[in-house]
Length: 292
Ligand code: ATP
Ligand code: MN
Image 1: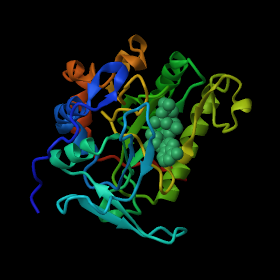
Image 2: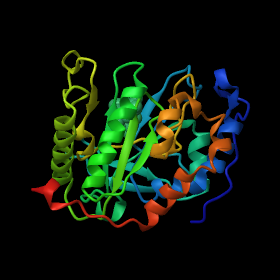
Image 3: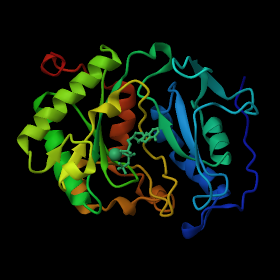
């Protein structure tokens, strides 16, 4: 069925009151980033965080596509082994679906690192860089370390802010390994990075044991993992957005620079064409040294 034009209901509803961003303005934002964002949503099971009354109201994590969704909204059903019911995830492949989700006050987009035709074979390796509170500069130093290690392994990388406190380094790969082997590779990678700077990086999950260090959590690569999409806002007061950046920008940015209000003026930066190109053309295999 052909996607329709989406009518914005309650267009004056303030979704980010601190920024003066209404639902109308938010749907326009999604329209402005659609060409760049859609390649990262295409064919992927999508979870969203909805906040029907805006970021200061109640928020909830939605996996199942609502029954009242229009018939042209695509879904992919994944049998949930532990739950009683299968989950019909939304698949957002076009600007109309993105606008419909925007009108549903879906403020955060969390696609899975798999595509619908081969759900058991991930196509992204993710390094989730989690700094301690107020230590974005530490996240940046660790990002450089991660980029150096991946470069030594011959892998091309993408970097983005998370819209939260840290950074994501993303390595697009061809679908040549299982989710389990990918997680193994991510664990190996984390070990290499941690060995280079044990004073700065840890894989320690418990906050008390991190001792001010930046955490890399390889379990973000497991089955059922998600990654906030590039250009997705976060459902927080500040309206920050997960935003592609080039490594040479990292030392001069603050994560709060990129919000639903400011992003449209930053869209000409080099990082954006790199991400679009990566989504369609990069064909990388993980090196044997990470898989053994
Ligand atoms: P930050 O920089 O603040 O850490 P983040 O997006 O990396 O932001 P994390 O908590 O590190 O947040 O989580 C990494 C990813 O894992 C998220 O982008 C999200 O897609 C997914 N995730 C995190 N928490 C949950 C959750 N409770 N349910 C589902 N997915 C989650
Ligand atoms: Mn994180």
